[in-house]
Length: 142
Image 1 (cartoon, rainbow, N blue to C red):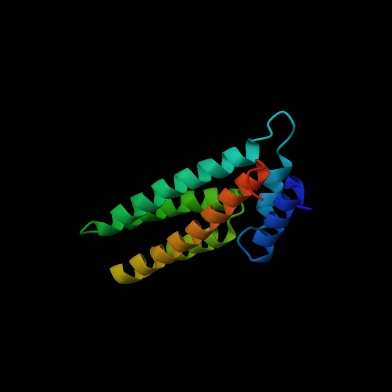
Image 2: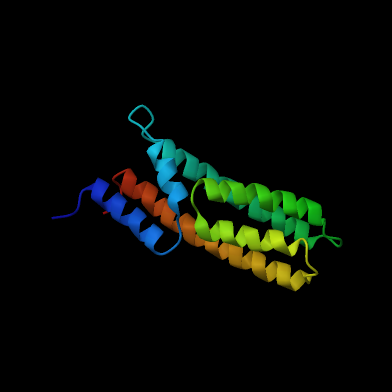
């Protein structure tokens, strides 16, 4: 007999926490959901994923310019770090912190691009897991 959608969802979230993809901020976010807005967490997560795609595109564009505006990079990274932290996306938040620290250091374009790619990879893993979580929560995954 298959586990109920609620048990599947809880197991999936537990796995995400155990592997370090999520932190306690996600559980705090989850507590804000109630019967009046059962799609609250899914909506917040979907907004985060859409913002993340846009943000990585903007960061990539900034790094492709002949002269990199470190202040603009820092501002975008700081904003995305906050978004990541608010949904508990621990690995993405850590990548943003590392990139923020780069703005105060002498780093080559290659170091920036490489580290941004690692941040994007962390985001893509979180994206996949969040999408699975949303499907399980909707009862579409088995």
